[in-house]
Amino acid sequence: MAVEMTFSIIKPNAVKKNAVGSIIKIFEDKGLKVTAAKMVRLSRSKCEEFYAEHKTRPFFGELVDFMTSGPVVLMCLKGENAVSKNREIMGATDPKKAEKGTIRALFGDNMGENAVHGSDSPVSADRELKLFFESNELVNP
Image 1 (cartoon, one colour):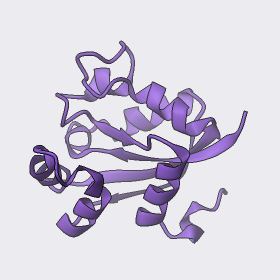
Image 2 (cartoon, rainbow, N blue to C red):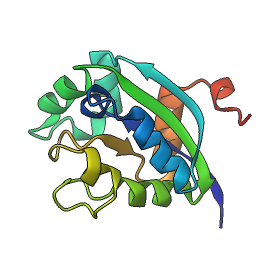
Image 3 (tube, rainbow, N blue to C red):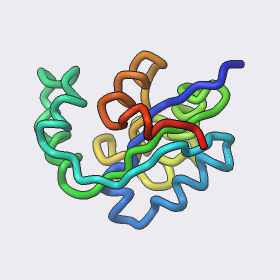
């Protein structure tokens, strides 16, 4: 098994619900370590850059509006097979289809406001971490 780093965002709806601590505890209880984190309000341009792969999709504008509507928590998570483990912990994109006990089942409101984002591959994780963190912020204490 490989130790990896992955990227996660606690989305505005979960921050608004005051669920940040609960979500981090779930990650930690499942074996992922938070090695870097910061609460920010995403700029529209940074958000559009992050979600560029969805630019031609009909939900793009609504997604950017939502993700810039309030503060988010950006995190680097580290652990054994962190990318796949994070995706398992988050649950299905649609909170109604997510397994009981997953973050999206617990805190998601709908497909768009599903509480968390997680990288879908090690390549995406690397790109997303570089977009939001400086390399010196990712040093494991």
